[in-house]
Image 1 (cartoon, rainbow, N blue to C red):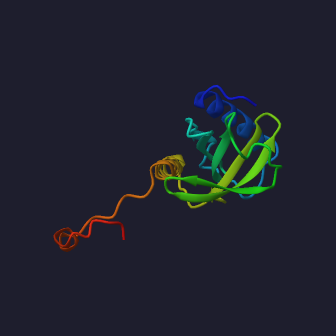
Image 2: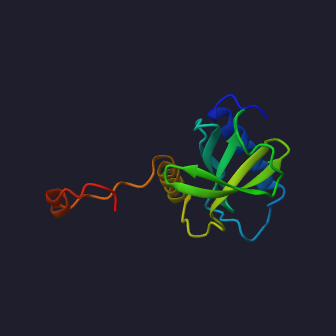
Length: 153
């Protein structure tokens, strides 16, 4: 599937996973009733479209492929490492009829540790920001500054 922009991905994801919620996941005991389906991010990053999907049963980082994605030919169920500023993460390739090929990396499952949608959104936003910007640099102590130790630790 060829994606135009992040808005198209977010809208499609929310529609598909709301349908999954009301059909395949209906009455499943692992659903957190305080949560709703919500997609965040999915702005172009290198060859892919990364974002976070919140559902009442999981929160995952998802990747949708761009035309130059190296993993698009991998079969569903296969795994690969993807490097982001925060580090390297293992993704599993998946395929959903209305979405096509995508990859996922689990953050939380099940979702009972979230009291409400606001808490899940805060966690998703923090995870996505950290993934794409990397860890904060450690502060340089006064002692290291005076000794000229300005390199990484």
